[in-house]
Amino acid sequence: MAYHLFEVYGIELEYMLVHKPDLKVHPMVDKLLTAKNGELTSDVENGKIEWSNEIVNHVVEIKTNGPTGDLEQLDQLFYENIKEINKILTQFDTCLLPTATHPFMDPFTETELWKHDHNKIYDLYNRIFDCNGHGWSNLQSMHINLPFANDAEFEKLHAAIRILLPIIPGLAASSPVMDRKFTGLKDTRLQYYKTNQKEVPEMTGKVIPEQVFNKKDYHKKIFEPINKAIKAFDDEKILDHHFLNSRGAIARFDRNAIEIRIIDIQENPSSDIAIATLIVEVLKLLVSEELVSLKDQKSWHEDKLFKIFNDVIKDAENTLITDHAYLAIFDLDRDADVKKIWKTLYEKVKSNLCENHRNHIEFLLQHGSLSTRILKGLRSDFSHANILKVYSRLAECLQNNRMFRP
Image 1 (cartoon, one colour):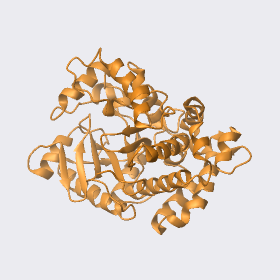
Image 2 (spheres, one colour; image 1 turned 120 degrees about the vertical axis):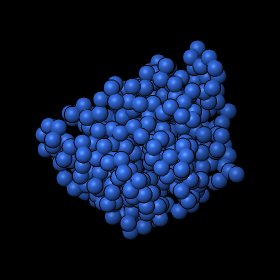
Image 3 (cartoon, helix red, strand yellow; image 1 turned 90 degrees about the vertical axis):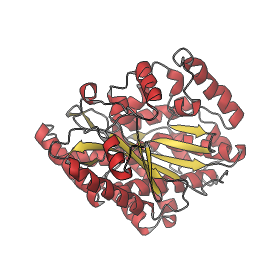
Image 4 (cartoon, rainbow, N blue to C red; image 1 turned 180 degrees about the horizontal axis):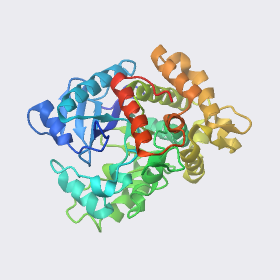
């Protein structure tokens, strides 16, 4: 069944499993799924939410079990599942850890790939890309899936998403620390995201998708180059171009949806779903052409959008945008930081958000991205003990569904 624009949504959240006393990654998602299901399967349905494995055995994904039209209650559903997972993990002295990167994991010695269902695909990925690095085994995100019914809807949705992608890290960055130090980037996960498939650059492109606005052109300009480039590696012909496409937003024509993939996971599901809802409402605004015409949205080349995106990865909400053509999209006529853009957009759509989502977005706009708050909490002290203290608080925020205050 093909759903129309903004009729339903699919949300996916990823979390690390860590040993509770020392927060070291604990690769035992297979044990978690077995404990829940009675036997090992790669997916476990839990009512309206589904749990599943990822490429590494210390990351679990929880997601909507099929499309949902209700974003307002979704954070509570996710929270109930997080509490249930943490309760199961108690017997293993383990818990879930939020944020998009682990602050002191050594991926070269601690990575354990998933060894069960679909492991042939994971093994092939490992042979091609060497998945023992940060860009594969130390990154957690939220994905938003948005439907389109036909080429005309795809055109509008893809054009709007491309425009918004560059500033999303200014709202959602949560990955400032790796290898026990501030990396110099508020969104380190996306820095790795840009390059972790450098062996086959056709897969990621410029992260911002190319100017393609119908299925035929998408296959010609994105899927066909990917298929051609991967042939030398995929000797068993087991890789699917829908999964190989690693841009920041990917077209899933197999299920008529676009999946946004550049959103760092937050400290609790209420914050994740509030961010998802704000993004959805702003995309509705762009699709309606109230801010700027579809023709103008389509005119933006990925190189220009990538330049803005690359700056925002570094400074998140504090990034100063000087491209006046881009700012004009949001009715801003002078240089402005990304926080100002999001405040402007929030004012335009806040009446469409429920009170809970408004409270979370207003907290973010007042106190900054999670990356900014993590750095404030660390106070330039990157000792192991201090990192452990701050990230243990983040694990408590997830368990209690509350915001992190430095």
